[in-house]
Amino acid sequence: MDKTTDCPYPGCFFCVMKEGNPSKRRASILKFFRELPSQDDNGQVLPISGLWNTAMAHPNDPEFIELGIFECMAALIWKGLKNRRWLSHDQNIYIPYYAAHIIGSYTMNMEEFAERAVRAGVIPPLIELLRGRLTWVEQRVALRALGHLATYASTFPTVASHDEILELSIQLAMSSLEIVYSHFYQDIDRRLSYHCDLLTRGMGGVEMESRKAEEWASQLQCWALQLINCFAFKPEFLPAICKPEFLVKLPGMWGGLVNENSPAGIGLLRTICHHKIGRGAVACCPGIVEALCNIARSSDDWQYMAIDCLLWLLRDPNTSHKVVDEAVPALVDLSEITALGDHKKLGDSIISALEECVQLQATGPNSLNSRTKEHIDELLSSRQRLKWEKNMPKEDLHIKQAASLVVKLEGNSLFSSGDIAGAASKYSEALALCPMRSKRERAVLYSNRAQCYLLLQQPLAAISDATRALGLHTPLNRHAKSLWRRAQAYDMLGLAKESLLDAILFINECSQSNDPDLSLRQNKVPDYAERLVKKQMRAAWLFREAATKHGGVRGEGDTHAIYGQESDDSEWETASESDIADDGRDEMDEDDENENEWKNEDEQKEKALKKDCTDIKRGKNLPLLEDEP
Image 1 (cartoon, one colour):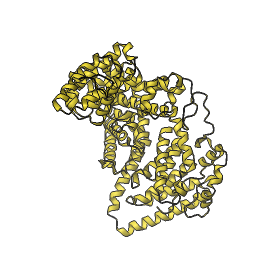
Image 2 (spheres, one colour):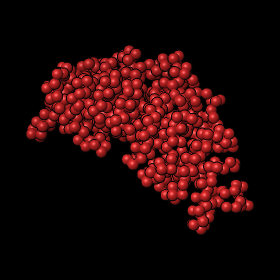
Image 3 (spheres, helix red, strand yellow):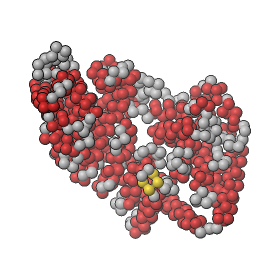
Image 4 (cartoon, one colour):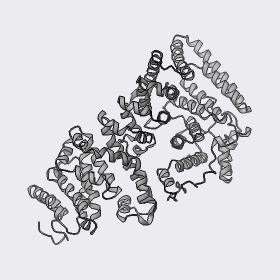
């Protein structure tokens, strides 16, 4: 191909693509792919970036695959690894990144393409990037490409034949956030310019770079987990995966939030729990069952995965006795869920597993403790009550429902007068009367009792009742007041991530609600909810652990405070640290007096932040108790 008068580069890829003759075009592209790795001319990054755009837009197009793009990209990565002089010249520093990204894009959907990539020898250079021979940015795209190659049955054995891939992936899953923090986020002056360019893609700005770094750090972890998950389906790799120092970190790995196809930490745990050896390791890992219970009670996309893990652990005779005391309370709270997404009759599955657990413990050497047995007996009794009520005359059910309403109103009255414990007792009495099929009414009773438990400083009981209310509500997990109450209870326990997720969902419900207690003027986010979200964003900040380890820095953006051992969170007083005053009680829905609290909202803004937060924890400006569902 001759240099044209319009193009400054000989053999220009973009000129090749304009060739009108299909045969000439294919021959020119084939020649281009063969010759590109051996060229040292300036401007090579331009065609590579063009190929990257094409791969992203048309990952299933076979043309470049057939003409040797995988061989070309593998050769370019090797060139960058071996020839640092060439790599540092012009903009060649970008080329290994683009080359690995192109390999990943063309292999993410088509097994045939993945097979061609393996035959073209892409795995060895990708492993070199995975080792960190360049930077964390290239590690990220190498993980992505290897993860796609490991997905297919025909190419997984070749990936798995390189033992270090799994070990490196595990190390990256655990250290990825610290790597990005220490090599990019912490020291602005040391940032590599091409990293900044890649992250912002022309948008620019230090704050944009930092926010994008958080997203890419999460992706780095996410793709590491995805690659490990491919290995976890094979029992022979589980001993290498199921090490306590790794398992204990999995529930806290947020890696799937930026990629809905990623298993995240909880998804990997679910895969591990499908195998006997994996269940044994999980059951012996301190704190992991408690974390699974918290995720199972959550309202996000991971909820079913955590429930599935708990059910697998309960049904295994070798692990059941180790997890039963922690798992049962959470599963009982979730037993009235009928369907969760595509998973039907979830409550029936939970009850069946608990029944099996009772039988298993009855015949085995380990017996249930009295509290656990009480939880299961209560659940089985309520299921029996449901069957019994199906045969009751409608008139009798109406009488029970009316009696329940009367008792609930008595509870509301006690609550308004300051007898919080008495109100909680009345809500319990009303629940005993309320028909099991009256789900809306039962959801209200559980939610109101959860508020009582909050004020009585019993966060675990509040979480339990709020979870039951959310499970009974239609749509599932969308009862705004229960979300807020559970967010507060999690805050009392210092569970920032769980509190954050519920607070965000509460705000979403406020924006869509017709309830005058929730839909504020001009669809404005409630101030107290905004403050809690900001607090929990600080506490659950992606780089918080890394920042603490490295002494703490000030992050860009309004959600990033100074982190480290000396950070001062005293202004965010937790509910457990607050004194509950009589004037901090929720009012009833039917009281006109509660309107004054909403009208005084602008005045409250002017108060000191600490007093605002303390007032919130004492019950002011909370979603009100419900009279009618």
